[in-house]
Amino acid sequence: MRCKLFHYQLRLVSGSKKEELYGTWINEEYKGRHSAPFEVMVISNEGIMYFYKTEKAVWETDIEVSKNGWIIEDFHVFTIEDKWTDSDSNIWYKVKAAEGSEDLGEKKYLLMRISDLNRVIEFMVSSLGYADDTTSTKTEYAHRTYYRQE
Image (cartoon, rainbow, N blue to C red; front, side, top):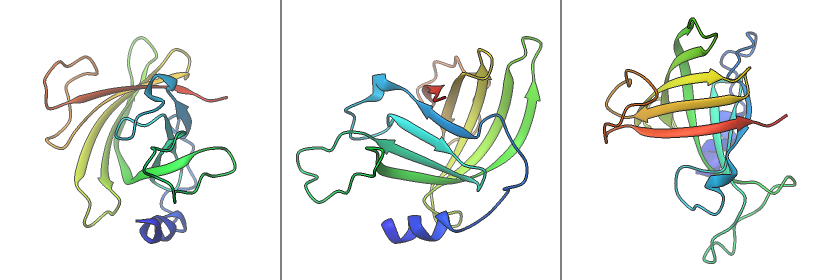
């Protein structure tokens, strides 16, 4: 996986336009998890979402920790399919992503809402298609919440 990650880090997809979803998002409630959701999500303007954790599992003795203390766990190549603003000034995105590889990775559909003056991002994710809103209780959707790191 690390070779694939390096390849995609060099790939520029959409670098010119600034989107509100780009940046570093953290949820410390996810700290200590060794499977999704991970504590840190970085959404780059290169069309890649990186997922990090900050603690190694006891069996991960050979895992490298970056200077900032993050451990890369996963990445998704993504495209923004739709964007709009609702009457409450929330910014919505429909994002299609693929785990690890555009061509080979499992497809994910994320309905994302940025609220609270651009400080909170919530999303529903599924491999079956987009959710209708971010409060769905259907079991095929996973809900995530992150907070912008300033």
